[in-house]
Amino acid sequence: MAEKNKELKEKLFSKRKNGYDRVSDKDCGAIEAYCTGYKAYLDAGKTERLCAAESIRMAEQAGYRRYERGMALASGDKVYVCNRGKAVMLAHLGTDTLDNGANIVAAHIDSPRLDLKPNPLYEEGEAAYLKTHYYGGIRKHQWTTILLELHGVVVKSDGTVVNVNIGAEEGDPKFIITDLLPHLGAEQNKKPLGEAIPAENLNLLVGSRPVEDEEGGERVKLAVMQLLYDKYGITEDDFTSAELEAVPAAKASDVGLDRSFIGAYGHDDRVCGYAALKALLDLEETPRKTAVCLLADKEEIGSMGVTGMQSAAFDTFMEDLCDAQDVPLRACFEKSFCLSADVNAAYDPGFAEVYEKRNAAFVNYGICLSKYTGARGKSGSSDATAETVAHVRGTFDRADVLWQIAELGKTDVGGGGTVAMFMANRNIDTIDAGVAVLSMHAPVEVVSKLDCYETYKGMKAVYQA
Ligand code: MN
Ligand code: MN
Image (cartoon, rainbow, N blue to C red):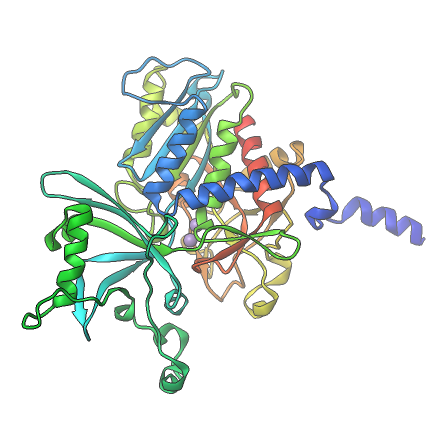
């Protein structure tokens, strides 16, 4: 009897288990090599602009050409478009024409951060500060007393673009947001975490050495402005038309005695962005369907705007490709499949109360599928069809990809969204899948190396489907 039940269990029960019980030593070598490339990608691309530039560098190295409207396209061609320096769309044209649809992987390359306000610079208490406005969902207390870098562009009124990069090079100064000492923190300690650091306290400390002039006011601010003018040729009014982003200064690092994790800023969602891009660039053969990789901006604030996934820039790109084959865009979209590649929350035993353990994502269990995201009664979710889930599950299984399926926390606790709904609204079958992350949206997030690699494998399988 016992033997029979064992057989029955083997036949009927789910066999999902820890990925390390399923990968070989050879796989472990591949995982390590892949993650070395990923860590370099993270360090090179701490903002959406830097990440777009690094992605394009890699694509061109792999033979991708910048697409120009009207360019003749043939099966096997590899093209890309960069949307305003902040988002990238790439396509490897398949052997089938686009009326058979495309296999799309859509990730985002913007991450939570602190943007400078339009009038950022001020002096108080004989020190100079830059005021910030947080971008995306951050837990504000996590962003104080850590070293920060500043990246971005200042565009002068004549259109000249000045690239700013302070803190990333060896020996560069860095910035910091100060916090109270415990000795004077008794009242602050009583506040809820979300109120302990008001947004208006997120000010970068940028200087204290005044210009020589004992009579004048704002001497430190003037000295800071002088330094910026000398290095970048910018004046205070130029901040108005700037996009300067403060991001954590730490580089991506192995975490754990066994080095099984990567700790870094911006895993959400460059961990999927890199996988989507690398899988596309690594395709050995021309895929049957056209393979499209999207690295979008603005997901963290709702995918709005010209560079977000709601922008017609994507439809325009696809329509241009379709036009080259005399295929109507709508015919292409209705036959297409999209893997909305974004991160999920990994089960954290320290905060077990917010997870529903039977439907939580676990580190080292592979790429995590999400049939739906949203909040409460799936509000704001596109909710993939069972047919779509079956398609992607079969695709992963046939390619020996380790995968799991999960929800983001307990039903009533919170929720989240991705670009999935904006792809699905276009009449494209779409489902979410990505890496499970610990400490999501924190200055340093944590992922498992095994999950990073399985996500890459999953995306490659999607392109090849
Ligand atoms: Mn995300
Ligand atoms: Mn996010």
